[in-house]
Length: 233
Image (tube, rainbow, N blue to C red; front, side):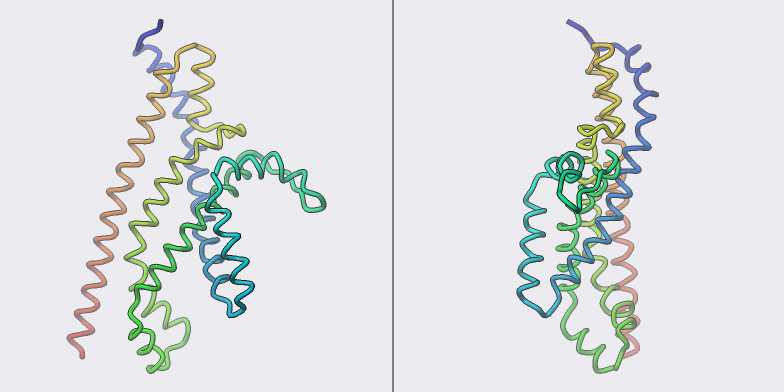
């Protein structure tokens, strides 16, 4: 039986910390990809051709209903075997694509709810004032649609960060992969896995506080703009 060892903890900590840049890098690029593809889903489902919308909807639902780890395995192991279109990906790219596309299906719904929260009168006012498409979105829609989406977008970023260790199953050398390797070499798992848990806590909790602060700040700025508009009227 083995017990907790501070010596093992201090020995493993710098090694696991080296993998943090891979974990954070995969989180950032996957999230940026999800933000972009989320808009693509929204645009595709907004086309006037209903049969096409139906197909896109069920593709998105299939992706959202499938576990991320299955999608990671498919892109890394199975996709290269698809006839004619099969392409091989590195472990990092396969994980990035799988996580990015998976979370984009949720983010598209966040975008939809944010835009849907804008009062219909605002759309009609922008049309009556003959606003261009760019002015309508940048001056009317987005300033009102963005603040309500910040908490959910932030939550999905944190959830994505916690899902990134799944990439260790195909060889992405992040903090979990290094911790598991250290444990297999030393037969001491409790210390390296505790370090992984601490790192996730130290990064996730402050992020949630930052997101909450940003939400409050944007709501405050929007309230000030609304008061100015009402004062002018």
